[in-house]
Length: 410
Image (cartoon, rainbow, N blue to C red):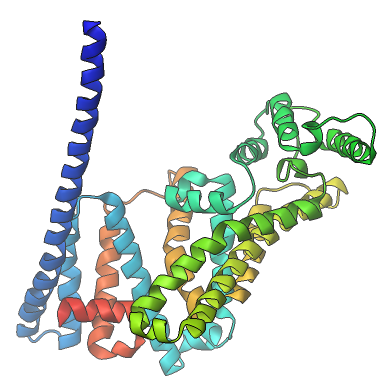
């Protein structure tokens, strides 16, 4: 009894110790980040002032070089993911400034790409293609949060995803276990009744599903039934994917659309214009939900369509089909506003860039090397570009970048 009491008393103490360590880490991380931000701002001003005194650089160039050299202060941030996120974000914002400058001057970039009214949508489709390929085939090349978000929004179970990866890589599958898993998800195998029309329908469903299940452990491709095991109908499975995603995310987007509306207009405006605000929030939430649920629907339809082509021997299975399916799923951005698509691109481009780089490093280790502290280089370039355009033409900066530059350097 004494040993049990001592073990029970030690369990709470260990959990409390973990909580103390966790809270200590949060405090330390906050302190280090608080040290990084003013160090970057003031060292940037100091270095740009010293460089301008040399008369070798114009004031905008001196400011850009000063901020680039001051970027070493990001090493004060001890969390790797924070450094990577800040570096990627600032780098993409810097590239966005170059694009906006070219657009304003009607430069070559605008002439060959930006003048097309749907260029932002096309770029988003490329982002979707790489993101979905990485999601299906190379999940370790994208952040866990990114993977979890796609996984929670999509209808395909992790069991089917892993089986797809193994099948594409030529690994042997435990097909009997997979078949049992698929049957457990189908209502026709859960309910048995004597006679009746419904039992006849279930019997037909069971017979149809038996034909779609795996017959061996090395299939060329995974059957559609593993993407929508609840039904043998690809049409019904795709609709279930759309409706399931719609129900899951509408409430989330409604809440997300409500908070900015209140913060932007104030409680007084909202209380005086309740119906107008409600319609605006409802429209925003519906648009975002339609975008994401349609994306899931198109991806599901694409996966089943390719399987039909394989069944008819029109083409051989290839893993790049997931890139193409993701690419065309990006057409769902038609439901989004242009500014919304641009925001998705700013968030997605660094992720797919990191994904491609990780895949190349793993596949060609002799030719593509991992760069130590590569995020430092991105932060230096991004900060230099952002500060340069802030001093010369602040109108080409995005609203978030402009606000950040004003907060840091004014």
